Length: 182
Image (tube, rainbow, N blue to C red; front, side, top):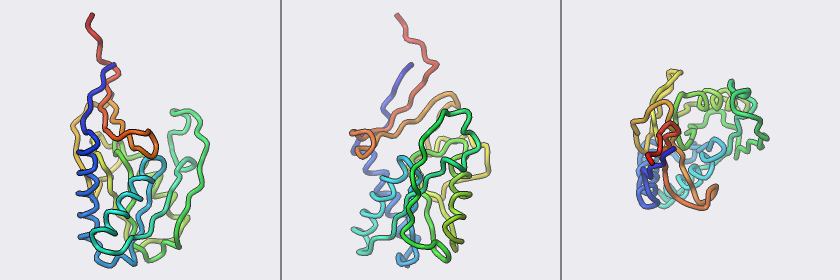
């Protein structure tokens, strides 16, 4: 197995800054904007985006937290996970929602998030913001806001480490098939 650091803490902060600027630019009416972080790492990213947008535009958008455990179609493949509560700051009917996640790969997480979102109202529009887009979709889902497109192989993993969840800041590319030469 090999690990390559793709982004360090400073570079990661730059990606988040770019996402915040793009979202803020596209949503001049922040009163209607709700950032929804997909658990686990999408939640701290959503709060960071809120803080950056507030600094840039003077008004913080609302933030919600979405757990998609019961909406996944691959529960049997990944082991059991204890679900968390989803928390929304308001009814999402008529709101402009930006779903936030750390990495998009096959699109299954976003598909589940869209289904889960229906339980909180009918948004006017839903967009997707991701830190890393690594391609290899199984569903026709593309991010509207992307920090970085990273070329990967399907058997590789991209792991985002955030201080809120991992006590460090970096992005790793992990290749489980790489052989260590002796």
